Length: 245
Length: 280
Image (cartoon, rainbow over all chains, first blue to last red; front, side, top):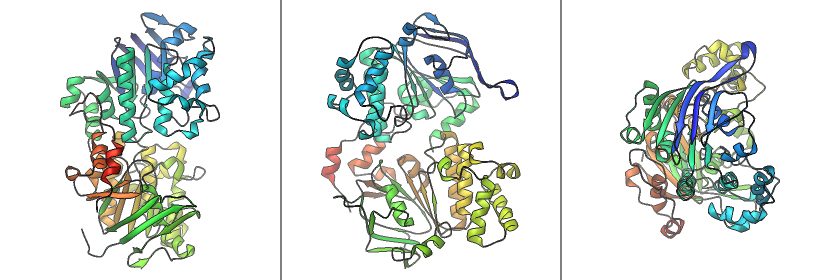
């Protein structure tokens, strides 16, 4: 579903130029959940932003659904992947009603009004359709993150890019949101790329995990490795130990 | 329970905001000696409000009532704001969640730590800088000279939290309240910061109150855990395995554990929790 080869991203000019992602390659099969784990600043979110088309100065090649995508995406290419951000408090417009938040992607992609889809979109993420009338401040953090997931699903993408979707939430609410993501993946045959610094969340959700450090992948762990705690690199071992205090 | 010389004695503490019909904190009682006490609960369970009530840092609309709220044998609630100001930072310290918000963004970090030294240790400017430098190296900040001249936005979150710890523990307070000290930090530095906090608190022989929503982390660090739900303490635990209350069990089960993979995570059954009520 996703193929990335030699992806490199640098920020800044001249002396301040910093190579944030150093030539990474990976592939994600259809229906798979790939996890990327690493500390802040290791470049994991930058990889995700390049996949989503939010960053446009990457080098290398990215293909989504078998077709290579350019840096300036066409509408069809943008429809393939949608993103859910970390903080539900800042990713939703505070002065728009939920219905307007939800129809915005549809209108931006020139796919009609979209107002008739709002009710079902809210129901599929487990919220009552009456929430369409509300403003974001009338919702709790977990409910807002559900709205963010509903918004990402409005365009019926095949790929969801999840950037720390639960790190701003309580453990009890995190469990609800993770369950919702698992259910949606099953019913809609979605492909996920999940970025997090929490190995416990990653291990719960993902079929395969890439460990990222300083812009490169240092380790790859499969489901069995995660259960037994097996690692192939000193850094992933260190991350593992830090996750279980 | 270490009844020997308790630092803090709280009986029946309740907090109400404005004319709200329910108490944000209701009938909380505990003793704290020179130990590590964890307070766990979801957002809105009142755990931070307890911490702030102890520091007397709640806004004026909050009404704080308690049968007893004694810090080192003397009541806290009746003290004047002036006396409290002398206590805060000196005898009572509060470490907050995000160092990006709790440090002053327009002053170099060294100056801020030195300010704490001038205020609480009553030393001169030069001595204060020396004390600040000493304290910063104690919290394992490499290259103290250089770091002291940096502004908060130039240092990482883990380093910022270490600066906060240095600033707060400089005056050797008797009671340290850490309100989610690691939730803004990466997993990889979380352990370091907690171990450091623990070590410094043990050294000063003071009491630590660790407020967090991460029940496993709290269990790993604290001798006793108070579990709060809807403003009340539903259970006091020494080990996670002893958890009886459905809320505590729900919180533990809601955390994903790679060693025990499940297809779906358990979510809280709020009806059962409300039915179980409060256990004394």
